[in-house]
Amino acid sequence: MPDDLDRIASIIGRDPGVWGVNALQNDRARREQLSKAVSLIRTAQEIVIVTGFPIPSSTPVRAETDGPAGSVALASCIARRGTHVRLVTDPISFPVVESTLRAASKDMSVDALASEEEMTRWRADAPLDLVIFVERPGPNAEGQYRSMSGLEIPDSAPLELLASGVKSIGVGDGGNEVGMGRVADLVRRSINHGAEIACVTSTDALIVAGTSNWGAFGLIAALAVADADADAPELEVPFNRQLLRGSVLGQAIDGISLKSEESVDGLAQNEYESVIEALSAAVARAR
Image (cartoon, rainbow, N blue to C red; front, side, top):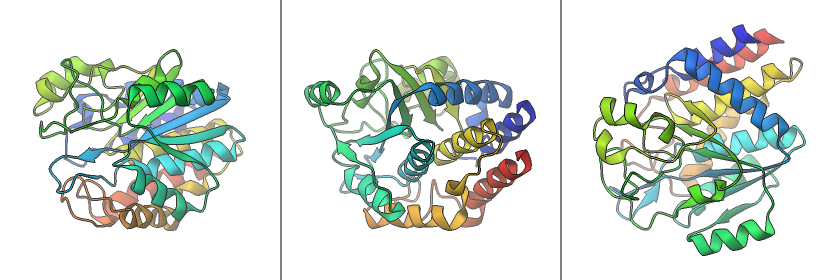
C-alpha cells in the first residue's frame, strides 16, 4: 500500500500551473494526509460532504465546476462501501450540486444551508461523525471569504461550522479553502494574494491537489487500494464527463474562464482526464 499511495499522491499533485499547489504540500506530506483521510473515512458511520464555491467575479454570482463533480463521485464511492453519506452546499451552489447528483443517478440527498442558525437545526436532526470539505471557501483571519484573486465572496454561508466537534477532511487547491488553516503560513508566503485569501480553518486531514476534483478522485483511489480487492467505477472517464455535464446544466462555470463549459480551472479536457485515467490505472495495478 505505501507504494500505491505514493503513486496516487504524485498523480493528484500534478501542478496544472494555476495556483502553485506543490508550494503548499509536497508528495510525501500528501501521501501522509491521504493515509490519514482514508483512516478517518473507513472508521466513520455518518459522513457529510460539503462543496460549492461561488465565483464573485461572475455576474450573477455562480458556482464553479471544481468541487461538485469530485464530491458526488466521492459520495458515490463512500455509499458503495456501505457508509451513510449526505451532501451539503450553500443556496448559490445548490442548483449545481443538485444537477451533478442527478446526472450521476445516485439516490442521495443534498441540502442547502445559509446561516449558522440553519446549521444548528440541521445538525440537531442529522447526526454525523465526519465532514469532508471539497473546494469549499473558508474564512481568512478577518472572517472574510475570498476568491483566489482576492475578491470577497458575498453572503458566503459559514459551512465550516458544520465540522465543530467532529473529525474533518479538507480538499483544496489554492489556499482559500476550508482545511488550509493547516498550511496558512505557506499560503501567505507562496500564493498570489496569499495574505488576503489564506483560510485559517484547519481540518484533521488536508489533501492539496492540482484541482480539488483531482483531490476527491485521489481519495477514491486511496480507498480502493486500501481495500485491496476493490475497484473504483467512479474513476471511469465517461462517468466523470457525465458529472461535469450535470454541473454545467446546473449553471456552473469554469472558475478560470468564467464560461459555462465542461472544463475545470481552464484545463483542456485531455489534461483534466489524464489524471482520472492515471488514478484508475494505479488502482488496477494495486489489485
